[in-house]
Length: 344
Image (cartoon, rainbow, N blue to C red; front, side):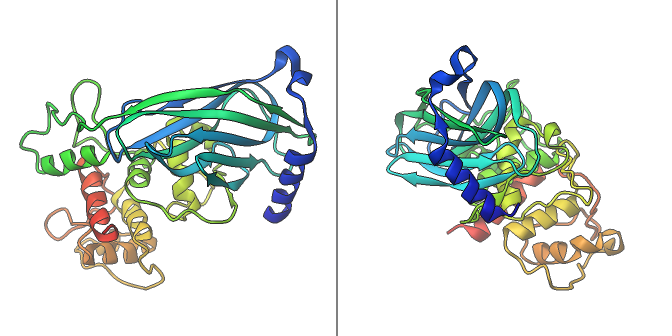
């Protein structure tokens, strides 16, 4: 089934075959809203995940969410399942977002995360986000409409986040760490540490990049996450990975896995950075490093261009260390440089 046909079918189902919620009786699904940050500072990210329980053969859905436009700016919405996403529409503080599976995919049953919406905090004060309507479609193309009227409360603060960490004083990236914390694309740990020298996973780096850079999401319906190891991607990371995948910043491996828990290496990071910067990767360039022969062919142009634009540095003795792991400090420093290149 092609994407256009799937969109048409989903639209027809949602409009014409909706049954009353009373048809479900005691077996009606229930929903909840999970906030990533109930006390955001100005300009920080707020992610709200819609979770469902008692789901039965859930194949497609349409969500309606209302939010406070004076405190929040809607950024994006992403589905948590493989399939086809209908781009979210945002009109006067009402967001409509739909997604469907494709082909003979099994519907979701029991408890599952359904979708995540991303907002930016733009003004101080209390704000409410409401889930006002949910249309559910099963694999038999039957639909039901529910009105959960759930709400998530948050309070945007004028104050800056805590910048005191026990392990960053005197670190080469101390100033960049504090700046990244204020910008809201990275956080410290509950024990008061930042762990600047800790290696970063593919999921963690993707999340940092997606939080920091306004990604040019497609204006037309796109295929949502379709990695074969989707069930191994942490729930918190799925919306960030979905955004990066939709824009082509990440493509996964040849076996269609993403491997979210794998530590990202510097060659992989260089390609993601180059794609986010919209560099021309069709060029055939050779980076000027002593270990150039160790840089994978698919990363050489990305390394060359990113180094030329001073987004990436070597690791001493004129080497790049393409298979070396990226630390939290290195990752946020590169992303800050990318922000400086892309943002006014």
